[in-house]
Length: 190
Image (cartoon, rainbow, N blue to C red; front, side, top):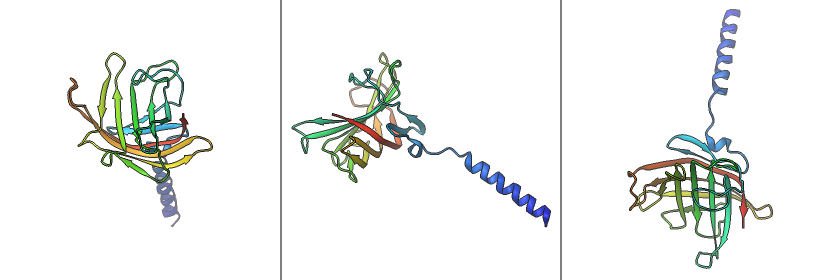
């Protein structure tokens, strides 16, 4: 009886240790102010927002951020860009994920490429060897806004998409799967 209790105790302890060693999905561990995803099964976490220029888009940012842009041609007069990369104030990015919601986003809403309310891009490489992949008619994506805090200018949500080499590019056609994407309390720049 005592031997059975000891063996049971060791088994329970071994089970506890093995369960605690399991790696969590990146969408569960993405911290505040960050954008995270799996690209072809590999976990990517963007750096926090900083003001160094991005080699991919030429805009003056790096890291994770959202931007609300006034645009008279979009529904509601605004669109939202969501972006994340691994660059910082001292280092160029080697990957970037960009999303555009083509209207003023609303918490609890989902935007898709099929409905024409979202578009997605994935960039890889360096400034001298940049590769670009995008959604198209056969490679789709979805972004869901789970929370918008208009007082604090923060946005949170989830996303996934497939991106392919755009037609007309000289690189070998390749499709990338971006899954388990999330962004938590990204600061909305205006």
